[in-house]
Image 1: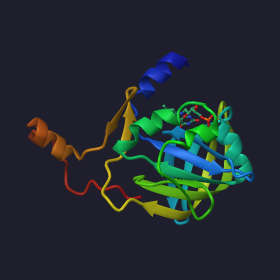
Image 2 (image 1 turned 90 degrees about the vertical axis):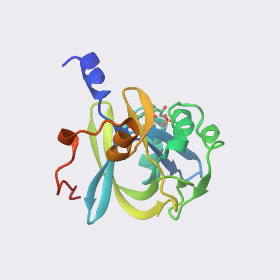
Image 3 (image 1 turned 60 degrees about the vertical axis):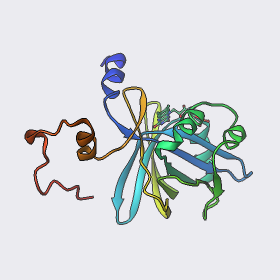
Image 4 (image 1 turned 135 degrees about the vertical axis):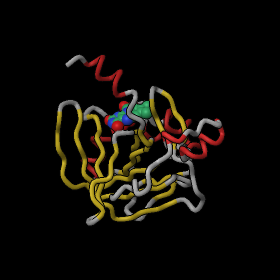
Length: 185
Ligand SMILES: Cc1cc2nc3c(=O)[nH]c(=O)nc-3n(C[C@H](O)[C@H](O)[C@H](O)COP(=O)(O)O)c2cc1C
């Protein structure tokens, strides 16, 4: 399979943007931007994220055994770029409203949601590892944030389709959603 084709096609997979953080035994904070994050099960509450073995954050999470998935709001697009670099970890946390969560990991104020996790199973695959997190604490912003989304190499923000169509004046009968199309998990 051609990597270039694969990457070109994956550009169309829109995803929520997160910053995955941790704090090591030496109290050093690490974090990186990640879109490969997915809900796994509600009972027990668990999620998964895919991190490159080469990232500093991966090594730090393996050591710390805890991590936080901070789901970004549209206002955090600059922070997403900032955490997508491998500048020194302590420099990364000079930007953003960070507090220490119950499990000791960095939690972002005004995140759309933050999931503090203990590290469960690790599944290695190629350059990346799937990290399964057992959720032990959840914070959600008091306001109704617009989640930050990444697709086709750009940041955007989630908006309900009906509102977007009203704004564009493009709603047509075929596009209307049939009743009962609800997500079950
Ligand atoms: C929009 C976006 C999404 C990303 N998603 C992931 C991801 O899911 N997993 C990953 O390992 N890296 C991802 N990255 C790349 C990391 O953020 C980047 O490699 C970062 O420099 C790692 O930092 P660290 O080495 O300090 O941990 C993404 C970058 C961007 C811009």
